[in-house]
Amino acid sequence: MLKIALVDDNTDFLLLLRKKVHAFFDGRNVLCEVRLFPNPEVFYFDLEEGFHYDICILDIEMPQMNGLELARKIRATAQATYLVFTTSYLQYAVEGYEVRAFSYIPKNLLEEKLDAALLGIFCEMQKNTEKYYFVETNSRFERIEYKEIIYVYKNNKNAVFVLTDREVPVRKTLQEVYLQLDAEEFMCIERGYIVNVQHIVKIESKELTLRNGKKLQIGRTHIREVKEAIHGYWRDRM
Image (cartoon, rainbow, N blue to C red; front, side, top):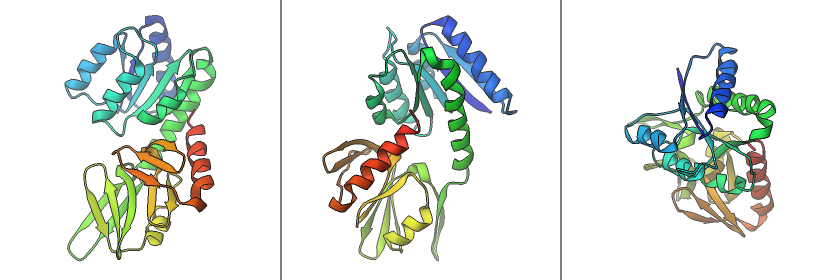
């Protein structure tokens, strides 16, 4: 069962949002539990108590706690949660890179945009159930989820996977790993690095900043390709 949180200080909007979310998932025979939070601080208490949500739809402009601030708190403990912002102003869109917002929905376009955002999440969830990289040696077998991979770098004859909580060396070339990953979220930024675009929080000049604080230089011949890939990936989610 999907667990979905809706956070907005406007109760009427919350009720409308719940109705539309239920209609979307009921139409696909997907069970979901939708909880409403007119106060973002109550939602945050839920997080502190260990509650997990698959999807959070957050209002950005709330008096008790800014939606972006709340999203940062979610990301501190839940990397896989899908975040969708509802807003009356789109000037916050760039800041969404930091928290990996899946989509922004202008409130006046809720009818047109909500189903498209939920469909995007639903399709990605289905794809992600099969998106793993398998590491197999004589002594171990490990399945690594794509979303765990921040970047991969070359170290002598190994490709080293830098994950959210550890590093995993694999006796393969970067080119082999890149071909095996075969997913739009991975890109080569220069000869020694493959980066997961989902973990990029900033791009400035020829430098990327990743979620773990690592800064990587983009190779001169890759700059245009990398910027286009990042813009394309996030444009599809706006």
